[in-house]
Every structure is written in C-alpha cells, then in structure tokens.
Length: 104
Image (cartoon, rainbow, N blue to C red):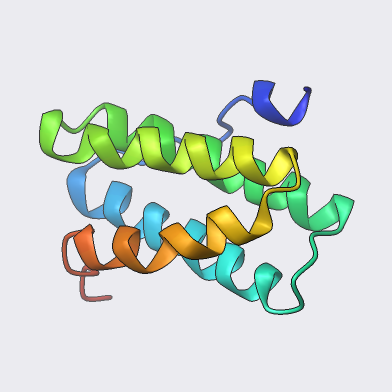
C-alpha cells in the first residue's frame, strides 16, 4: 500500500521533461520486467519514477494527463504482482506516447 502512496520528489517542469520522465519510467519498468519478477528495490524505484512522471504529465494538459493515469495503473498492477498485465500493456503505452524528446 505504501508503494501506491509514493509522492513525487522531482516534478518535470515542462512538456518535454514530462514526456522524458514517462520514457525514463518505461525504460526502468521494461528492464525490471525482463526477468518476469520485480524485487522490492525495483518496485520502489519504479513507484518513485512513476510518481514523478505522473505528476509532471498531469500538469501538461489533457493530451498528456491520460498517460499519468496509465502510469499510475501500471504501478498499482505491479504492486499487486500482476506482471503479465503490465507487460501486456507496455507496447500500446509506448506506441501512444508522443515522440521521445531529443536530448540537447
């Protein structure tokens, strides 16, 4: 339950930073799921990145807010051990995200 109550520590300030934070969450989540199990430290890191990304996306208007809800849902599913459901939803989530911002 405390995983679902994770508060953001770094809130992305603009649209590109919010999108990049969603990709950072996705990258860590995908890597963590590679072995089909989630360790407690992995879950904590995913929850923190998810809280940060979700908070940033929620501040960027309706087109990005939907992704915040999906991130929150992925984190909640992981906390409940629903790895197959999370893995099943990642492709569509990644495909729907706006293009990853170019790094300066």
